[in-house]
Image (cartoon, rainbow, N blue to C red; front, side):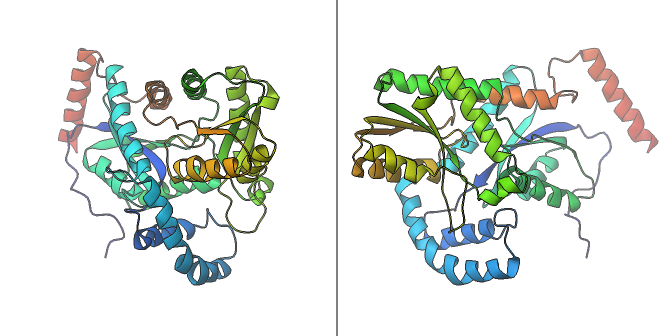
Length: 367
C-alpha cells in the first residue's frame, strides 16, 4: 500500500491558487469528560509539549492524568462554552474569514482556512483541503506571537509530517512569529486604551498584569526564545501605553505539574496584589490572539475570585484581540509580507496574465 495521501490525478493547465492556513492550539469538540480526554491525550502525548522520557511520561499520562483530569477540565470548559461552540474555535474561524476579506480588499486573491494543532479541524485535513482546491502555494501562519518549540515548532512539525505523505507537494512558506510586529503591538495598546475609556483611567494604585502562558523553566535553559520574546512584547506594549514600569507586571500562567516554570507565576501575583490591597487590576494576555479557556476561565473567573478573596477590589480581564479590525489589518499586513513574490494580486496586468496562461498551455501541450 502506498504511504502517500490519495489525491486527484494531476491535470495540465489547472489554475494555481495560493492559500493561507491559520493555526491555533486546539480545543475539545464539546465540554464533556470524554471529549476532553481525547483532546488531552493528543495534546499531552506530543513530545514537543512534555520533554521528559517517554516511558515515564506514558505511565504518568495514562495512569494519573487522563483518568482524573478530564472531568475537572470539562467543568471549566462548560463554564465558557457558547451556543456556537468553543470560543477559541469560533474566534479563529471568524479571523480566517475576515483575513480573506481584508486581503481581498487590498487586491490579493487567496484562499484562507484554519486548523488546530490538536483536535479538529486538523492540520493535515486543512492542508489537504487547500491542496484539493488547487493551492500550489500555501502560507502557514501559526497564531502564536511569541515563538516556542512547544507551540509554533509543534505546528510546523505537523505540517512537515503532512508534506512527507504528499506526492505532489505545494510550495510552503511559514511564519515564525510576530512578537514585535508594529500592527500587533498597536492593536494590543488600542484594546487597553478602549478598556480604560470604558472603565476609567488608571490611578496610582493601578496595576496592569501582562500574563503569558507559562512554560517549564528548562525550555529557557535549553535555548527556547519564548521568555525573551514575551518580555519584548511586554516592553513594547508598556512603552506604547506610556505606563511607568512599576504599573506593569509581567507574569506567566497555566503552570502544570511540580517542576519549576517561568516566573513570576500569574496566580501567585494576583494573590499577592490582592493581599497588598491594590485597588484595581486589569489583566491582558498578549500571547493569546483569541479568547479561550486560559483567558475566559483561568483569568476572568478563577483569577478574579482569587484577587477578591485576597482583599483586592476591582479586577477585570481585557479581551483578546479576537476579531478587532486593527488586529485583522495587522494580520493581513503580516500575511502580505510573507506572500511577497507569489502571484496573488488580482489587479495584475491583464497582458501578463494572458502571457502566463499561454505559457502554461504550451507547457501542458509539451508534457
